[in-house]
Length: 141
Image 1 (tube, one colour):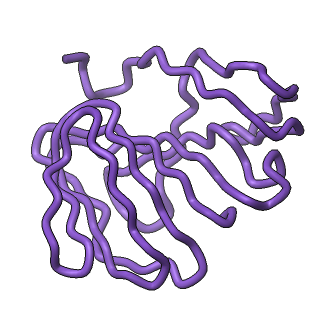
Image 2 (cartoon, one colour; image 1 turned 90 degrees about the vertical axis):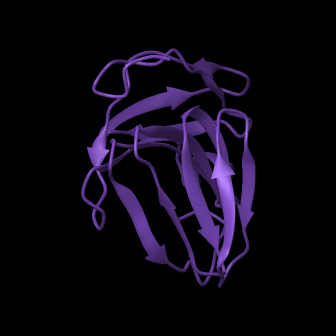
C-alpha cells in the first residue's frame, strides 16, 4: 500500500461531458474523452479536519449533472455525520480501509468497495490508517 500522506497516487479520470474543470483553484480545459492524470491538488475540506479533496470533474463539465472528487482522509480522521439534502453521493474506495455509516448501517471500506448514500440520509466515514476514495455527487455540488 502506498503512503497515505502527501504522495501522489496515479489515478486518471475520464470526463464524458467536455468543458472546463476547476482542480485545486487552477482551471484545466477538458475535451470529451481526455483522461486527467498527474499530481493531486489537495484542498482542505471546509468542515472536517484531516480531510482533503481534489476536484476531478467539476459540475460545469457535466452540465450540472454530477461532481466528482477524489477524497483523502488522513489516518485517525473522519468525515463526521452529515446529510446532503439535494445530492446522492456514491463512493468508490481507491486505497486504504475505513468504515462508512449510512443511516446507522455499517459498511466496511476497502479498495474496490462501492457505497451509495441516497439524498437526505445521514452518513459518515472514519479511518484509522488513512483512506482515499472517489466521491461522485449527483446532481452536482
